[in-house]
Length: 251
Image 1 (spheres, one colour):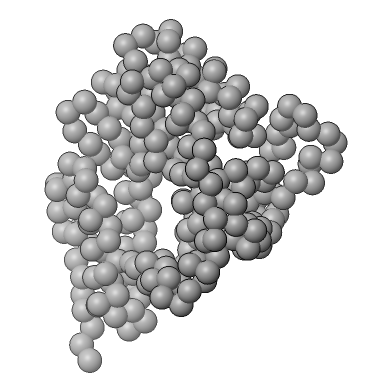
Image 2: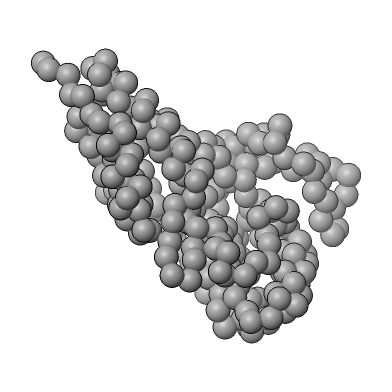
């Protein structure tokens, strides 16, 4: 297993921090952070792959800043080896923290290896904490799901979402990375469409009130269109922008 060392000087260099700042604000300058991501990264957190003490110190500070953020939403889960003090374990990340995306990819690498080498699933996909396995046998998929649940609990102290971890035929479509995927086409999730419409309506109001510039609104819309274009959404986009035309205030 490869271990990465001497990362801290590269992380805190001004060019790298500025690059991260520009990436983080892209398409989001007009709105508050919109998501909280729950992730359990304690113990051997990421430390099995990061051997730099200063970098791990920085990771700890980020994790500590999110302690308790999900206290009202999280149902306590005990894993093998836990004692009564496990209930005090900090959980959660700060709102809008982009490190969760990268950490999920690093932390769940062990799951990737398990799916490919132990389960020998030839059709396996994962992006952050979304993953999909394909097989011709429903029975095999149910067995794999039980084995993955046991692996996550034992090795990574994680649980799968009770409603979203399902075994379904591909013809009915499956949710993955914000889309509903079918064998012949892709559609945006209904919930994602509703969120965009609500945000777009609010942005139109801000534009009319002079509290948002046309350039800022264009950046936000362009970002959403770039995402939506990955699916079969031409008619959807046409309908939305016809239903909610822009009225640009005069100077």
